[in-house]
Image (cartoon, rainbow, N blue to C red; front, side, top):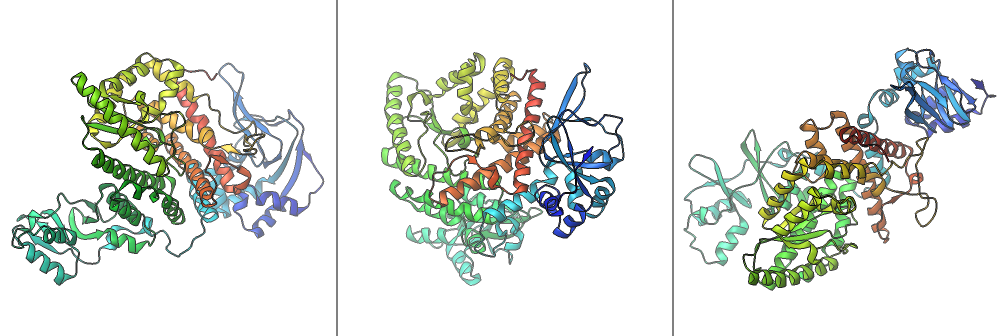
Length: 639
């Protein structure tokens, strides 16, 4: 090892200060560590470590250059395990376990190192828990919690001290007193008197057995008065049933999603299946002043299509609130999905009221990221329409006329609501994607059983479909049809799996980022195509192989893990990496929208913190592991 003349301590400290895990240390600790470091240099092709022979005496941290780590393969040829580029460490696990090197380490170009003495490194491990975690724990434990926290601090300017209320407050903390109830047979007038006496906005209606049968709210009482109902009528004639309930241990964010999804304003809270209280949408709005519940109420209140056009302009404000409260991408995309679904449902309901009932039952399908519930700020329309098979030509013509006008009107209004049309015209306004159930079955059978590689790859968006509005049994029938046929069609699945291998992780030979070299996105990475898509494709092909109904990527990974189709560690790392990439994309797009710029998917790694960059590299690294798993399952060679 060629030791160079002493380098200025400030230069060493500066390098350590921007290199994980040393960047996690205090400045005084960096100064102490720098005193035990030397700068070394080796030419290309130098063997730094020889497997089972070399006992490392120092930790090598690459300053410039690169090192390959190898072991002998089955045919005694060199098998590559990993590369170490700038900031990468060589020999750390061997030092920690006081053992000979477990792999060969060879420079692949002229390389500068920072060499940390063994005793200084081991002392660091004993006294610095953050450094210990970095070297001994896996990706999910080491990087993600701090990376998410740092992303929040860097990209969210907190405007209040609300903390993490939606995500930290349990429903049990929101119920201040036992719920007020009434029983079957009591009059509407008696119920009104009880609500007035106890200053509450709702009553639980109980059966003689004590079980909660329904709920009556002040809105129900106002409706009874408006309809001129007999005040002596039994309370069960105006109650809402069944009652939605949640356990007191769940957090307010989940209650908020439940209320918005079910379009209700009251939730019964339980402990060990016993009622302990009632939480209202007002309670949550008071808890967090910018709650999405106000947006939900405004969507519900619209009585004409035009009133929906400006609603989505407020979505970035809701997202900003969630980001500032520390919400992860999985939570945020669920909220975006609920809001977008509510807008769509209200829009289609108003159109049906305007155009009259359809000639046949139908279901509006959402595809792609909408179907997977993974929308971010920039969401083009990807939708389709399926309707019940007509039993004669007259009904078929009526369906053609009605659904053509209905779909075109819906697409146009969605554009006015802020949802751009699909550039590839994968929308219900396209006759090809507005078909009876039998035609949709034929589409999927052709893709699955007679796969043309190019056509199948263009059709992947359809395999993420979900029902959004209308007769959901039509979508369920179609999903069951896919689940019956896809698992048995190896050629189809191999086409999908092979396509997953074509997107290489955007990391170079030395684990540096591979960025655009020119153009408007110079020095940036397309985090959607190069980062997120491989995870989506991986989860999709295995979900289809095993007949799973889930469409959301995280849900697919979870179910695949639960059923033993992918290893526990791989599933966990894939889910965490995917959510981190999704979070980066979402925060990036939110910032662009707030600055009045069109959102895109191009991230500049140099604008991230050191921790974010390192976590991004680790997330990209998981892609290679997913591809290796698919290669083994489907016996594919990387082309």
